[in-house]
Length: 418
Image: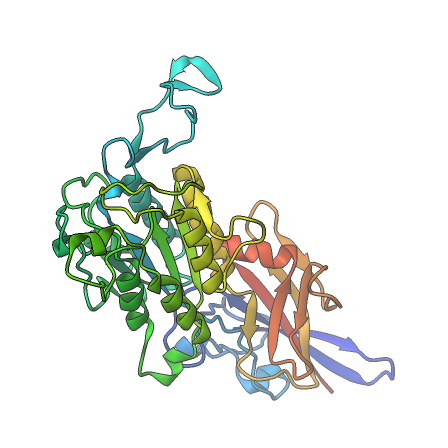
């Protein structure tokens, strides 16, 4: 927060003093209770004094702000669990490789837009997933707390047995702030081949991820919680197979996955579902380690609906055909998770108001708004108070979109003292 003076006169001719207080809202993590944002401020000017009080984000005394406490715009940091498919099909010969940069969709070895130029070699799906996770946890680390679960675990073997199905009982990386580096160090490297093995125990992966989202801290429990499930196949390796035969582990679809995802959504934990090159076809009945007579596309549609984050149209999950699409899907989901609502430390009093609001001020195309609220947040761009108590501000339209992309907004409050 910062305070800087101004002055004016009302229509009655009585002298009034207008003081501006700027809240620089960032997506930096702050674990000091209900104030989950970080504000920074330059030194006040014009004879007004201010006091930097550190983590509270309030750098203005009440004397500087018309005798009332300066408002602080807070940011709520969500808890996000990445549940990642590490099955052998992610690196399998032929099936486990794809056109990472999308330059050779017909797989003839030449660029689609230039038949005289060789296309870039195909890469493993795991390499694409690793590089996409790297991008997301790096770019969005300040705006959300990440954790990660691998299914199956790194202990999984490429055997047609239960050895292909283990999943850790606790997340591979616990949810916390600044966990990007830990996630990248824990999951197998981008060029891994031998350690990418096993079946698709997606239900067990979900259960472990959900256990990592649980917390005994009441304040932490109030934060939004999400799962991002990324997979390239139909769930198998059920927790309770019908018998001890390998066929029951691998050749039968695990229909408990949408149940677990649906139960999580009922507990206010949505799940985003991302598919890696999922074909809308029914599998055969051959014994190859994939559920028989199963349309993975339809099954993932079902899981996406159960998770409460189904996309509009026929395709309910985020299906991706190359790394560019995979990165775009994770980027879109991360932006959806980023909230455009900022709870204020206290409701604004009658002598306080918003003077101006600017999104991405130092960017190429900043958006500047005045003191007037929009009347319809669904169709207009700008900002408004979320209710009559004036206890939270929400960005609308283009303002919200730009904020989700940049994470930068500056709100200038003002107070008028007689």
